[in-house]
Length: 412
Ligand SMILES: Cc1cc2nc3c(=O)[nH]c(=O)nc-3n(C[C@H](O)[C@H](O)[C@H](O)COP(=O)(O)OP(=O)(O)OC[C@H]3O[C@@H](n4cnc5c(N)ncnc54)[C@H](O)[C@@H]3O)c2cc1C
Image 1: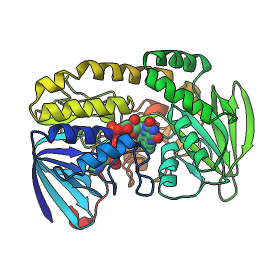
Image 2 (image 1 turned 45 degrees about the horizontal axis):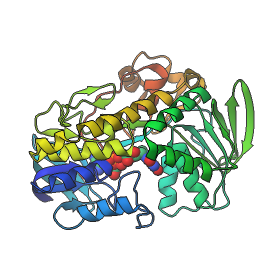
Image 3 (image 1 turned 90 degrees about the vertical axis):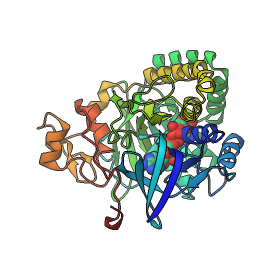
Image 4 (image 1 turned 45 degrees about the vertical axis):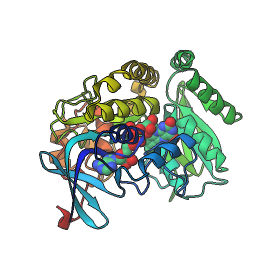
């Protein structure tokens, strides 16, 4: 076991965690812990060890310059005491004692069950992108990208750059909502330029709004998907389906620490401080609002945690603008009710414990379903089916108990 003591501990090495660490490091001893081999988080995940964004490389290099202690490949799984967290590393257990904590644990994809979603070669949109960045080849593969949100376009464009053949993009939101969102981008010219570049890069790829995957089919692996649009069903042959329905904030560390949570997000004040005095939170756990919001929230949290309140205050207006973009994003890509009717009785909802939709309809809440069926009690601890059942049945997610990730017995 190793022991580390630090003034400020940042959990999460994505946009929010990196900018928090850098901002705090001018005044305090900072440690960053992240469960990936390299810093960068979801958006800047290095591709085979190389960063393709100069801005990301600059931030990662600055954090790696030696002033800040960086612990990679370490997953924080529990609190040992009020100011001590436990992380599992390749070498075993690490105990990290801190004065102040900044939670920057990001978000994950939401998956919704439909017949065939558990077939091999059905992936999350961001999950597939991560695999390809890790070296999985997609050249020549026919890919359908489906679900909702700007991530569909970003990933479709990326897959095309890897010579995949993107045969369809199915966006569940309506054309009118999407149009309203596009119009709102005139207030953020840089986003407008990004969106235009993505659309240009995807010229020739069929893109449908009001459209979603109703089922996936194949003998041993995916062969076809059925798309539904305005009451009509069409079938497309494909090798891969990348499908995701927005993001879910990762609040699993904040909950057992006692931080107040509302509507699935960590509640913070203007200085990104949570309801627990020495715990701050930045980025997607406070609400999904995109990379600019994560960056500025991280900076505010870092400055405030290090005692530079004036520096933090000077960024409030910038953060409010970034959050307004997030609110527009969430309105535009809100999930439609028809998606609640995709699963049939045999469709697996909890894939860790093989619990089907029909079995879950007997229960009134997640806790009862959990006790009777083991739904949400497998290795992912409800991270997938919890978000799905919240949408399908309106169930509140269950409590979070340590360890928040499965760990080796000897590290407990
Ligand atoms: C799968 C996925 C792919 C995405 N791809 C894109 C994209 O291509 N383009 C785009 O614009 N946006 C993308 N996004 C959205 C993007 O993540 C946000 O816009 C923004 O970058 C989030 O920054 P963050 O720092 O808040 O979170 P993240 O970037 O998610 O960083 C959080 C970090 O904390 C780590 N972590 C979480 N819990 C623990 C723990 N207990 N112990 C140790 N480490 C932990 C995570 O592994 C991660 O590295 C993606 C999101 C997801 C979920």
